[in-house]
Length: 155
Image 1 (cartoon, rainbow, N blue to C red):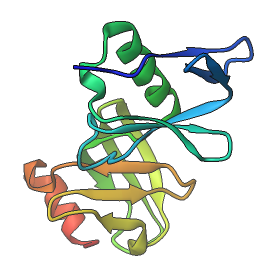
Image 2 (cartoon, helix red, strand yellow):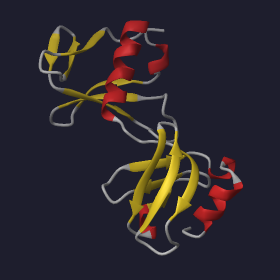
Image 3 (cartoon, helix red, strand yellow):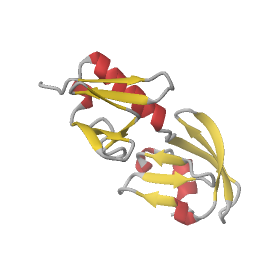
């Protein structure tokens, strides 16, 4: 597979920079094109003005150093805990405090209103807390019965 020759690295100030065609672009931002539906496909590297500098259709097929840099830049930018179980909700009216188990551990957040639960697909939801942190429910039918029952009260 023929990949563009590029170097993605952190500069001395801790910002990502891209060397492409012997030109250094800094700072840059690495973003997923389809973060929910196809998180391991299609990544774009943008300059400070939001202009695309580099499109990477299949980041998993990059040579190891490039792949590590791309995924490190993505991980530094993204924070979307995935809800694995809803332990409890303080009330079925909003605002309510939710206690959930995520892939990063147990946490609590405040749901301001039912409109803060967005359906992305038939089985995928995004729940935004009062501080704007977004929590992902990737596969609603795969959640345990208790979690689905609590979520049904809000959907």
